[in-house]
Image (cartoon, rainbow, N blue to C red; front, side, top):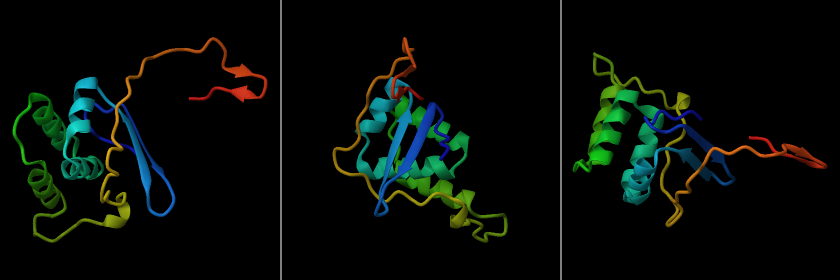
Length: 133
């Protein structure tokens, strides 16, 4: 899956069994802290928005989070999704079959952040071991 969150460099949604997934992303430390501390419902709305809204919308949400502005993320995202999915006649144009399934919730205490650094290994291949990634 490809994410459009403005300062997210990489994101991966790993499908697990029984309809569960694991989401992993990389971003700047300031935004990572804000995302980790968001209430669960705001975080869920923001993740869904990352797969459904335009880059300009996501840049706006990011700026609001980083600047500490008081914003009702759920209402703002819901409104923007409604605008995005309607054409000029007011007819609903969203085709959910072309979009990733919506995230319904996040397991309690499952959000965490880990600082990453660019490093190179001295060796990438050893007997019976290969370092990939």
